[in-house]
Image (tube, rainbow, N blue to C red; front, side):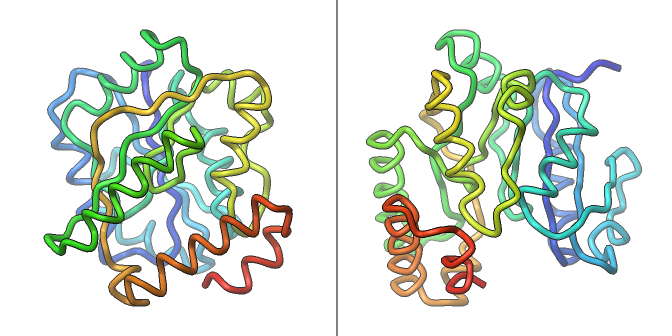
Length: 228
């Protein structure tokens, strides 16, 4: 079967949440043919072993989100690649929106708006800030569900093997190559777990600082020491 969209999920020790994410993807109301590719960077492959769905393509890879996503892309058969975080849920018509966006807007890549699965008001503020930041820079981040035409992804050479900022680096290279990046005016929803674990204010300010330092030229290898 030819798939239209390959959903590539890099994971590292996520056995307790991965089946919920896969189940959510399987219950999306969509007519688009999709495949799910799970790429585990943990040496014990705990996440792959936990997967119940036999239709999911499971790949073991060296650790590193960019490395893992490249491995998933290499195994993919879809013409469009969607890179999804393990704790992020799509909306029902997301596959249709991806195809429509790439067709109607002459774009080669894109992403959704960020939604956070929490009722706390502070997260609505974060969502708004991400909304405006994305439209100002035209550089979406990985938790926004980055999608890209497979052919263009291969022309760029895929993700660079960086310990951090691999998503930003890819989007910057898309722009440098003259490719248009579209933003879908609909939210996909990620877990608030990292903000809640580290503290909303600390996590947000730390992330802003790291991205600013990256944009002014500090290597990702150095910045990764401050992001665990």
